[in-house]
Image (cartoon, rainbow, N blue to C red; front, top):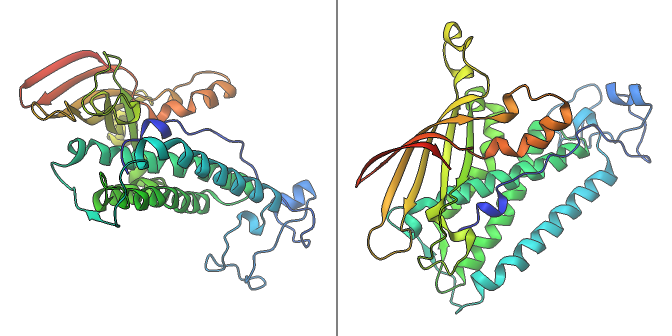
Amino acid sequence: MRRFAVLCAVALVFTHGPAHSEDAPQVETRSSAREGAPVLPLPGAREGNFSLDDLPPYRHQGISRGRLAIALAGVGVYDVAFYETLKKPWWSGTKSDMHVINDWWNGYAMEVDKAAHAFAGQSMARLAAESYEWTGMTRTQALFWGGVTSLATLSQVEVLDGYTAKFGFSTADYAANIAGAFFPLAQEMWHPLKTVTFKISYHTRRFEEHGNNGNILEDYDRQTYWLVLNLKETLPRTVSSVVPAWLGIAAGYGVENAFASTGRMREYYLALDIDPTRANVGPGWLSRALAPLRYVHLPSPAVRFREDGTRFFALYF
């Protein structure tokens, strides 16, 4: 699978909150006592002895069957739309037997596509997790099943690549899929990772075709991927008290002439980063509207390092 980080760059923000089944047995929880609604008991759970080993994991030992059905239907619709959109540009060519490629270094697009795979995996996982949490799951459980959903979608893409002569099932791509799909869960479970954000940015300069047939999803020359460290949460308390909560330091990776036969160069960046979701922007609706921008690296001062020299950008897009 190649080339589709932009397709998944923005994750929607859904309304959270516990949900309840109308025909479920009465099990009083904090939420049901407050709202007077019955919830579905956790299958396999021993009375008075709840354990995470008792699956499936439901928040407050309850989940809305109706909301779960809606969430799963949404996942199915997305999966079909994803396939129908990409089958012609990616899988309409010459078929082959299943074959595996190991393009870990100096391969397709100089590995920028691996970052794209990871970013796509993260975006799909977060989107699915929002809908699963809406059904009644805890945040951790929703992120787990979101990761599973993301990896399932990306796995079918890799399999289809494996039967396409020009591509192949890439072990490096699949490793990136796994890392991206479960990165949100890892952040939730290990606090130090919460200070790190995985972002994308896209150049606004003239679009050039280097063997990508004008496909914006494969326009790797214009894509840069960033790992951002939030300074306020990382620096010592004596220093962080004067650092804005929205300020971070970012390390980026990109490529020049990704599909050219000559002149290909890796690009490394060091930049400041702005996270508008950490700023005091006013009303709650505005904060929610800005939420997808948390995963987009906004224009900021940056330094680029590559083999033909170092360059400073007052604003790098």
